[in-house]
Length: 568
Image (cartoon, rainbow, N blue to C red; front, side, top):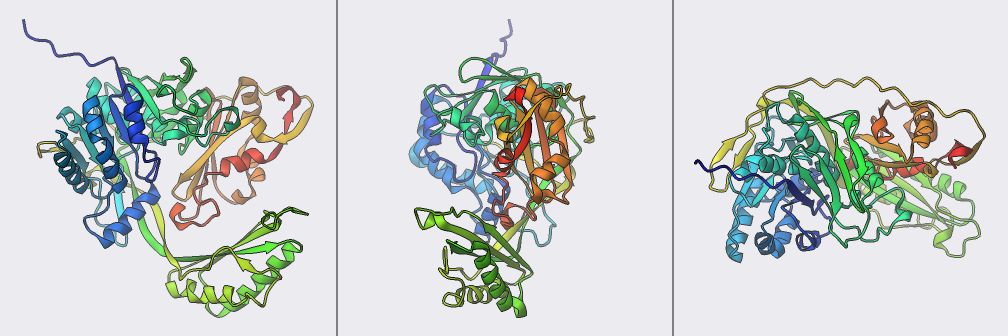
């Protein structure tokens, strides 16, 4: 009788050990030692990271990858091999081939028989003035590398979820690029999105953090099944919490409407079901998938110009008058050579009758930008510091202003798939071209679902919105994402009718004049907002005090609204 092919294990355990370049260094060892695992992933790339790596590559053409990852492997490569754990990371950044070569050399030096592969083809040509230009690839290249026997796969710019969809497709034999496994792939996309930011799904940055011990949250893992369903959890005994709330928060983070598009599949977020599956375990299932859009998203970074910053400390009485005085003096000094952009912001951190000097202080922040360094350098430094003995009483600054530094700009674009050559470079050196999906579907908005029945009229009380709702926010280029969810059905009935786009503008005056999208996700009892242009030219340009909109949701939760007393 012919031998039958071995069946894959029914559950694939994929963990995450990095949510960004600079995350907890010892997470790799902790995840490898903490419990059962089949694949360990690391996400190192963000829009800002690409700019940082691009500047490094300008100085050294062999650079451009996350060196932290190489140091983490030096400590854990033997442990991963002994435990049979494969490692998949996008730490290759702008130079995945260079990182793969370094890993192979490291493995040889350590005497670890690790088979190393990498994925390339994401870099785009022809964008004049761009520091970096990369398309977001899917997980099929990772799948090809793992099917060829790779123990370690490093990539350049792939979608964050690809670090999970690639291994899952390799393990379960899904047809990446076909139409038969779209639902399974979409389920893995959702699992990948939940893991990508590390401890954010295990209690980190969580709106209701006071209800849990989140001093040192463990890193997450997903138990993925052949149909794409998953259970999100963490290793036994690690800190933090995994519950429906933490999973909901991460699912809303940096997403938008019901269709969450990727290179391999479009996942329908309006079909996601979350339910408790035991202590510290949340089941994620029901996800439907659709064919991906024909174009690929690309990220472009460039040097936007030069910036400088001065923070004046205003102490005690007459804060507003002190701010007005120094602002007038600096503006007068800059009149002959005014930078292209001048932004002032007064943060009233002072308290009346404070028992410490710091508690009596407010901060006046001046940020300037210009295409030319000279306009933000000595001219600004002199305008500020020469006032040291000639301005408001108690004049001082938090730090001496520098000569100015370059700032970056991120732009999103969409390119035809013929612009990239998605390639898996296998452990034996063979190069395998990754084919495009067989079917595409243009993106279109999903009709807004019906809202729940509103609560009947009744007495209200004015309290912070955060008494009723959680929120998480983040950045997408120059846009901000703001997800808000209710914790029970009654609160959802109120939230869905109350937090309209107009109400959001009233609560967050900075959004006046911006285009705001509101997406309704009843299955999550959530609203997801996109605030177009709030972040200017993106996080790298540091236009706002909170340039990545990380705290936008907490600002919203602190605003007072009229809440039905029955909910309180």
